[in-house]
Length: 621
Image (cartoon, rainbow, N blue to C red; front, side):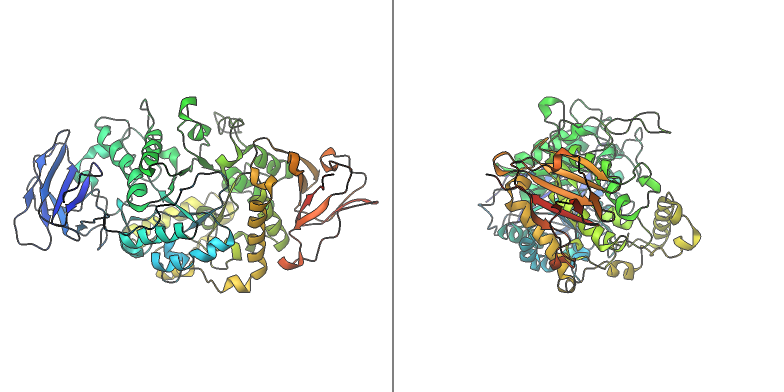
């Protein structure tokens, strides 16, 4: 039985023995489908208007093919290939998603409120680096309390390993981790475990190797815009309509054919679009249409901190859900390490910065910065806390260092635990990076398997980028940088799950904090303007979360030495009812390798333990 097309481009199986091909190639006279395993002549496609060519071919699932353009001998993979079994330079394969036996019909999807996100890279999450191996860990991630997995990019790229941000086949999940059905099975199993899955996608550039789009049309790119990583995508120039359609269709494709719960959009500041409707708005709308009533989650990375990305469309925004909050990370990093070189130079890591980041999200919302002609950031005081995705580690920030060390190795155990508690209990949307929950000792550095000349250029670009940090610009430091193209660099980044037991205290810390966040009505609420704070000392501060009928909560955070307050002239420390505060949780608990926490308040004033976060609850009458 024939089926209608689902997407505007690509090869789609209409039945067991017929596939419809459609490709955009404006300016060309003839497009033919060349079947790899057949001696039959190439099959010409017919002009289909607006530069498209389309036609039916009597082949089915699994067929390998390429396109020939204007009768020339070169053969090219499909720009919208659903799978590249031999990589981006090989033939494309017809993939039929229809037979996959989904079991998640009752899965409701997930929005952004109440989520705990977990970023992972499939190739290094397990030793095997496959969807199947990653799926084995889903029950344990659910027990940890994670609710949403954010999978680093999987659009196919050349080589044996890579981060995924140089993808060239946006519709083809990389063959390195398994087949498209393996990916579908992973999502189905995640939903069965109660976990949502969102995918990191790169809509700002294509990778430098294996990108054949120019063979079909130069209009995929816009030379009027500058892009940090290559050619800018043409979202607003001549012939941009089909290009926009390509990316908008891709956003819906992942939701429709893989049942994903949403996307994380990489570096949206490099998505240049002056159209009446920004392409991000169109992407959000299409993604939600594809979800057919299920809740969805769309998070953006944006270096410019454009708050309008998450404002409703009716209020002039783009209508997405979340923004990565680098300001919180940067201030926390300086507080933990004492280093503020490179792009950390605008941050001091002082209590007032951390307070403001927790209360308001971005620290820079338009203020002028010395040496810059205009302010950094945009007003965001109206946004809800859950719009801000907060973290103290992610793939970029760990790797932007000499050795790719996790932050628990760059600070003291007490400070690490105290900052972890702040991040997981603050009202933003917290995000962990793979292995963070058990203090993984495996590094996470940049790795990419390119051919020799490109590998040399990539390694140089990496060194040049890190040279903004004075200590990383030194020849002796650059000499120890891991070679991105060396397979051992990639293998060193793979997690060792035996560390869950060997670092049981850190694992228990994360598990207990997530459980507290979920079970306690005050922490769970993520109320807009539902908290206030005050500086208590050089490295200490208090946050008070207002809980109305559930009572208030105090977070006492001290990243420095023990602090004695007598008197304590800070009204946020005063209990609601005259009854003393009770310790609800402490990062210095014996279970987490601490030394225990006595009552903070006594007749002698307040004694605030050093390098600890303590949570207090005031009993109501």
